[in-house]
Length: 407
Image (cartoon, rainbow, N blue to C red):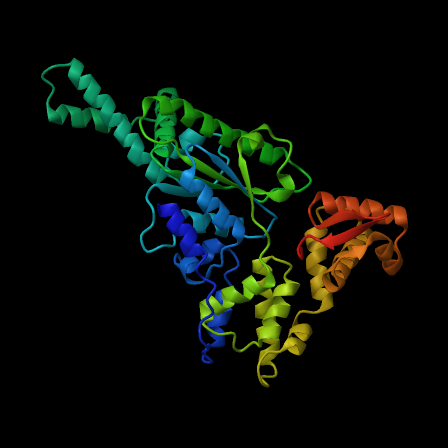
């Protein structure tokens, strides 16, 4: 029942703590500067993580799965690494030893890197590798009568010190699969890939597939349950790969503004020195990306410290996080979609900011308001819809356009 308990724990963080007006700005700076979950303290998940619905859904699925594969889908920057950390229970007081979480690292010579202790999982791997060699020595001792314990230890030490060659690589492969077969849940964090080049992602997914396939084949020689896999994949890339057909999809939606504010409350037990409206404004500006929320908090604190007149309100927020800054962040985000078309990037920024401000709009209204030709607007929206920046639905003879961040 460990996973169901995890789901319950993750969903129990909605109670707002009481006010406390004594939060030093140095603490807020320190918190907001840790943009990546890898740089935060191990207990941060328990202390202030706010779990999106997708994390709770995945936790419940894992409780009843045996050998299942969950694809944890989310847009770039939405918090897939944080979600995996929460599901792994690594930040809990008593971490689950039957779960393993690691960043997928493509290794041309995987088994050699494990043997040479240059792989992130080398330490755990060598525990299983030594166990495999120890069993080999014991089997040989049964065939050779009269061997002493000292001779067995000598042979084991000799095997452990063997150089990397074809024979040791085969043993490493067996130990690698055994290591994962001993786990209940295997969580794999893939990197953020280029939205316009899927070849690297396809290679990594192929390697993960062969890991899963090897574990499936070895299961016949082991009793017990087959481990479950959770693989984090960019939403923009989740298509056109045979391995996806074997996965159950769980979507990790961008955090709502209220959830971002809740994370701040959980960490500091208050909203000071911000007003509620100011924090909500920063969260809306972040468009569901938590690390952007942290950056904007830092900018606003810096602006406030030049004045120090009362709490931080929406006026200070707008002075700190300017329209130009928001447009610049969006343009950087869109640079990969339109690498050589700066005019299209600017048009896309203007369009997305309009949707953020006004909500859903008719496509014909956007054409008129932004001064973009009908055919050019259609092509721009098609590109943005393909990469999940906007959604469209038909209403009569027109189409209603909405930002996917505000749905």
